[in-house]
Image 1 (cartoon, rainbow, N blue to C red):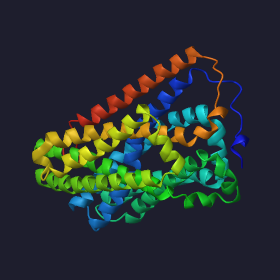
Image 2: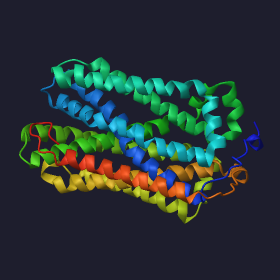
Image 3: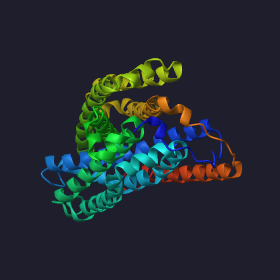
Image 4: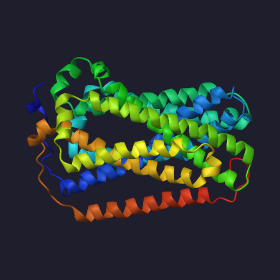
Length: 372
């Protein structure tokens, strides 16, 4: 399918300047990534921790699994909620690509909703009917949730790869499964998985260190912190290795486009790589997380910053992929500043509510091993 057959842009135009929607897309996707990491990585890590504990609530790994599903009580909901805005912005800027991509693998795209419902229910069934509540069992539920979230991630990676490669749409039209043969499919998916596990493990380690520092179940929290810290360390190692592999497997024209993209591309890409290596150095120096509480906190802040930089880099790689069809992306602008202002007010209000909820969780006076 020639790239000139890419559908025309919406004649209604953009309700504001294009740069503004690019900025909003990256920012809202970054927010989505934070909670997506908890939903995907946290559920996968909880499944592994549950298995390692033998399904026992009193084992440190069992306690880790319990805390992860406790976090995901709100993490999954917020991952879904914060995913709405970037989905809308990508449809505003790239509707002629994105809609086509979802149509070409329509079966999988529609299946995503069913998988999401199943994953959500399975995670709650594990929390309410499994080890976190009853003391034992529930491994089938948490593994079902983990596999469902992994399939959801695979579908999103597939849609991304299809919509940024219009020159291959004819192949995908013959069989949507061909996207799985893309050399970057596996490393892209693994990048999300490793990053999610690492982020969730780091959150868990920080949580355990925070409680141990307050004298709450010191022995248990020290054990959880040590276990989670190792997962965070080795997951970050995997992210760095996989990221280098992904960069090398990019199509030659895309890789050349990145190398020739100038400071706007080189600076975020370089900062992202250096940031990930810096996180590894910080993690490797910590042997007892409880005794290095400030380093644990600093590492968490550093990881959040790296996630933000990677969100920007991912967007820039999309721009390079679609560079050959740039002439088909000329928008007219019909500004709707009142509607945009209303959106900003609602967005800030929602972020304020989320910040308030997180603060209440972290400052809750509840006592016991699960107190935030």
